[in-house]
Image 1 (cartoon, rainbow, N blue to C red):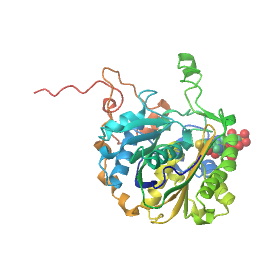
Image 2 (cartoon, protein in one colour):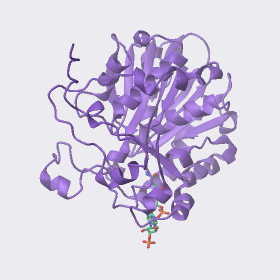
Image 3 (cartoon, helix red, strand yellow):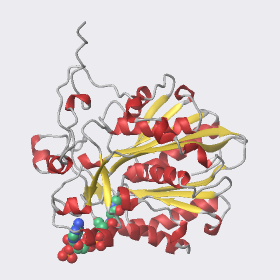
Image 4 (cartoon, rainbow, N blue to C red):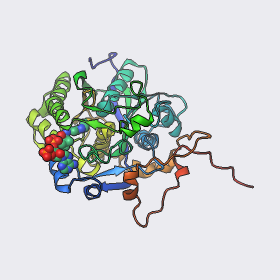
Amino acid sequence: MTNQGAPGLRAHVTGWGRYVPEQVITNADLEKMVDTNDEWIVTRTGIRERRVAAANETTASMAAVAGLRAIRTAGLDPDEIDLILLATLTPDYYMPSTAALVKEAIGNTRAAAMDVAAACSGFVYAFSTAQAYVTSGLAKHVLVIGAELLTRFLDYSDRGTCILFGDGAGAVVVSGSAEPGGALGIELTTESQGAYMIWLPAGGAKSPPSRETVARGEHYIRMEGRETYRFATRTLASTALASIRRAGLEPDDVKLFIPHQANIRIIEAVAKGLGLSMDRMFVNLDRYGNTSAASVPIALAEAVNSGRVEVGDRICIVAFGAGFTSGAATIEWTADPTRGIDADTLVRPGDVHVRLPVDWDSVDPIPPALAELMARPGELPVPLDDVVPGEPAPAPVS
Ligand SMILES: CC(C)(COP(=O)(O)OP(=O)(O)OC[C@H]1O[C@@H](n2cnc3c(N)ncnc32)[C@H](O)[C@@H]1OP(=O)(O)O)[C@@H](O)C(=O)NCCC(=O)NCCS
């Protein structure tokens, strides 16, 4: 992929934000469900806990909160966004796109909106698409979101996968301007021989959902862990390096790497592959697990808000995922890093309203295996009709 568009215009990150659900599932919680233990999970992955969306949350609702926070950080009005790109492998529906629901939820009337499917690399793929739109002049401000609700697609009898993943959303605003800096170099790869190493067998055209597919558990994520691990350790460093070199830089010129948060051992391998120490790698997977397309933008927002990125710093976002895909972008940071600190208090989940379908019966979206864990003593149950597809609220009686 080439990385520079029309002369003069550059793609800058002007806003960032993230949202994670409140409910925490610890390794000790998972010990009650599958034959695993905290020591194994921490040693093999680095993960200590992950977030789980409540019954009243969806990929669209989390994406909308993160997206609105990014828009506020950029100092924009939602209607100034020209294009919404939402990277996810867990859309609310096959159709419409989750991006379409997010557009309305954040109060935007003019943007084009679409989902991007590149699994855990999805955010970097969407970011590179945004870069192409703004540098070509087709869009001035693009909202790029990574959002996932993976805990509803996990087999809680498979200890090889259910311990890894969590829910959340992150977003950036990419804006075009003639100022120097912004996205400097982008590299994307797809190695289709790994297509069935991480996959979700049923639900698509090849194997439409049926009683049989559900009985066989084919609506859950399947993964060959060791093969995926090998791909990740082989590819992440080389993809990052290609992106850095496209920017005319060397790894040592990059202040902070924001890698996909899948496994601490994979991130250590990237650091080793690039000849850098671990303090150059941002890590938050201990708190969130692998949130797929949401992992890089959540980590980016937390890195910037915690003071790890300053104006003029070069950073590199890099991810890998099903496909097999990988992607990296080297960016010269140009925005005031303090702008995002208040975003969480400025935008609350109640500020977004995702449209619900009309005349549709509610279904409890929480997997039975999780329901017991999520019903913590003393916590009020969330009314189902508040959240999931349901009847419209009855008109108030006057
Ligand atoms: C999944 C992963 C953590 C497993 O770690 P690993 O070191 O490769 O472990 P293995 O799969 O070789 O399994 C080693 C042993 O631990 C066991 N094991 C697997 N999961 C376990 C768990 N949650 N708790 C306890 N034991 C477990 C296995 O059954 C195996 O036992 P055995 O030796 O008796 O057969 C690791 O392969 C990984 O991170 N892969 C990449 C996954 C990834 O990043 N996916 C997302 C891509 S975006």
